[in-house]
Image (cartoon, rainbow, N blue to C red; front, side, top):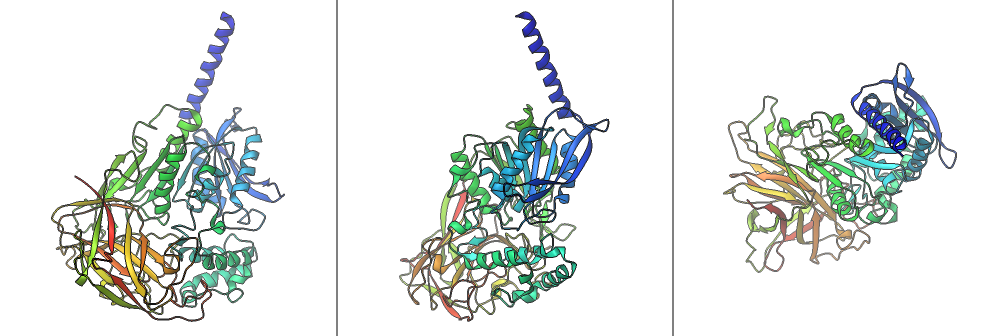
Length: 622
């Protein structure tokens, strides 16, 4: 009995010593490239395996695995592979189906659950694997994590989805029924690189020429099957046409629909990463709210002042948020998380930032408004630890639209008040920054003064957007005190149109007053949103309007955390387009993305006692 206990103690000590060695040591790395892994239908996916080695030999022990599945080329994971393998993990990078070295036909996300399941099963059988998998990746690559989580893959232990594809029919690919044009741009760019079609150099050249002339193709929408070089990459053309025509949030957008099917998500530790200016920000916060109520395992959330995939930077667009806004070592904090959940390390998870609390938020706007040496607005901000989202202590205050452009927390008293504007689809309001990804060449991401410049192909002159007659501007008086807005934001409108279908857009702006550094002031975009009128009642069913009839509309903006400082103004811009952020509504009521005509619409916003149009701001009390 004593001898058995002694042997057990010795074995336990040896195991703990090895775990400590794996945690602390840096190993050499051997890479096995282009391992072809068979899926259940026989399709083989190209896979690279990064193995930690000692004295030129792989370790004898079975190790936890970090997996990434990507449509962007597995070689892009080299830095991750080297880093994690040096720290005692096996790193596996796999090209998704139909991309780069993998066989098969690409489809947007739909194969990634089953393929990820088969990949994990293969990993579990390998001599270097202990069958425990964590996942990393951003954007689409974050989406492949969600896809495997929703398959409840047995080997999957934890995920860190960053700016991840999810809830595509809600506020991402379709947004209030409108189509986010960043995905049109994604297809134009990716159809000719890493696709089946691009394997022929001549075809790749034609598709690249198409991508290089994206601005010209933007002017010729809607896309029609077989009429552009995109027909040379038929799986890309087929998906884009269907996606632009499919407005309803139904089974077409089923993959990664976490909000409607949270019970499908595997119960495991999840760390959600997003940015206030990221294209998936609204879904990241919504996923946290939903999963933290459904999963028994811990769910964490961090939201910074970032654009898509730029957690290591503290400035973007025309704005600087201060050095602390950036995550200094993007790999180290991920390893800390994996060391805890995959290796059992007793470390900072649950004890110190960025793991001290379940929610970590960057509150923007506490800078001094000066100009940095790089010429950016010093908007500033700071990190704050929270335990929930949305914050229960927030006051959901309505700020009402008033005649003559006023905005206040006082209800309108007039019995009849409205403002009309003309929306011409041939001259849509240009996009000046915002929650954009894959905007290369057609849009600028992030925080920008709402004033034209050479940075914007469709608004190149130094003219503020507020000068346009098709934008209704409502703003407060200069604020008497700092006002923090942190949470989810909605604009409630009562409106009518001369058309059977149209769009209504809203944008929240922090109006910096004129200063020595910015003598014209600075109109900083904070959040925006859209609703397509035919989806005003439901994202699942279309219903055209009766011209002249007043309807209620809800425009869901992206979440934010921003201090509107004393002396600033809170501003809301209302219009009917934001292009090329969203596709332009032709106002004709024809089937989505199949129109041959456009109609100019007169749209009317009511703001009287019976129709108190307003924005709901989650204000944090001092």
